[in-house]
Length: 264
Image (tube, rainbow, N blue to C red; front, side):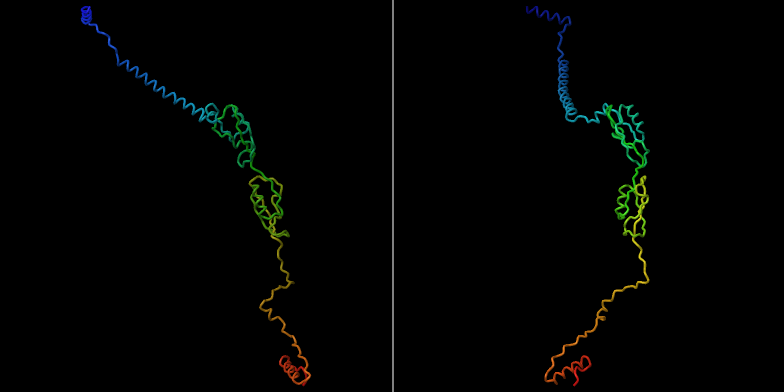
């Protein structure tokens, strides 16, 4: 049997038959690529899950971002009338909700001067846009400030938007009080406008030639105007002995008044 086995092997060698070999290299390459694919998948799956949680739960998109993704850009309505603005918004699927009137010094009456939201922002279809419509230049009525002090009347007019000028006039009204207003109180004026106030300066001072000027006396001359002391000194009691008392009295009266008090 051993000889038969040897002969079979020799016969195959003679015919050029070779035993198939296993390709270990190709098999190992396919296995390595499969391992790397699983590693990459294991890394991408947690990353994708984390990004989805952060984007949808932790940091959800704002209303503007959501509207920008599926919404409509708000057009610029400034300068258009209310009717024109309604048509423009309706073509985009939006509506004009409010049209509040506001005074404006330059805009034409009926033209839109402001809007909310601003142009370029996004809204979902069916949302509303609010607008402010100009009603023309501002107007105000002139208040009655007659009798007011000038500064108080000026402050009141300036708060209403008026410019204030003033002129002075003599009158019986106390000085500094308003005695006249132009334009008349109650009239409606288009601002800016000027209101002129007439202010009293009191009555004029008139010199009367029949009234003498009164000059206050000089304090240093008061002592010269005081009368001299004319008090008579008391007379000493009469002495019964006569001569010594009479002599003393006569000497005193002669020295002070230049006369004798009693004849010798």
